[in-house]
Image (tube, rainbow, N blue to C red):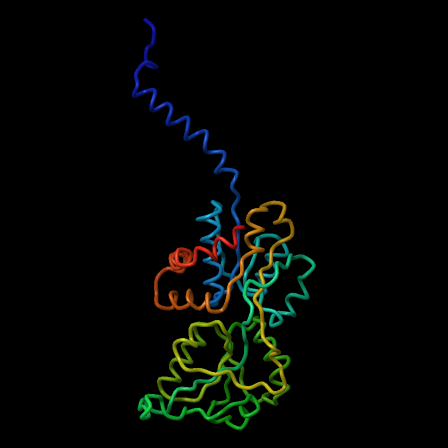
Length: 303
């Protein structure tokens, strides 16, 4: 007796579904995975998750992000174990850039107008308000880096820093401390998290503190802070954040490369996402929320 299974409409529909699933698999299989390195700084968490969201949600590629130190990021881009990074603060990281520049593609700034420097609180000595509703005089009366050495005891002989291999810490050790005669001070290494925790504790207890800071950053929205004047211009006129890619990415993933080359945003646009991340929630989910709130900006990156 002949087999009439192919005349069964249910069987035919099942076979058709299997065929369509199988036939569509190669299109997805051709999509490559892009790997992006980032440092555990709030600005880079924001930008890297936003780029990841665009690559996954709009370009259809798998994207894996990996937290690394500054040194490891540059090495990973050079040896091609990572495809890109969005965290090259220049000229703050000029030492690293000069060392590895022959093995990387510099796609230019993804954010202009960043600032680095030494930061102190500007909150008042009490919680009382003046008649005009403004806080009274700040408890820290200091305006310039030149004044730091005159307040050794108030600062407890410490300057609160971040990761020891960061460009900011290199500038501190090699340029700023000698330029301003701060050799007696201890430069405390740590992380962004430990730095902001120290800052929060000092503000709460109204203690003197000076930290390494930068903008854009959520802490400037949370507290009243100011950069100390830098009359010797050690920090320069400001930093831009560059996107760096590995050699060969343009040929391997031209669509992704073009997007990374187009990706740029303003400090105000970044601060919107920084604030959402600080308020809570998953950085990737917040990045998708930012995409929905700024569709024209996202489209400009994909042209």
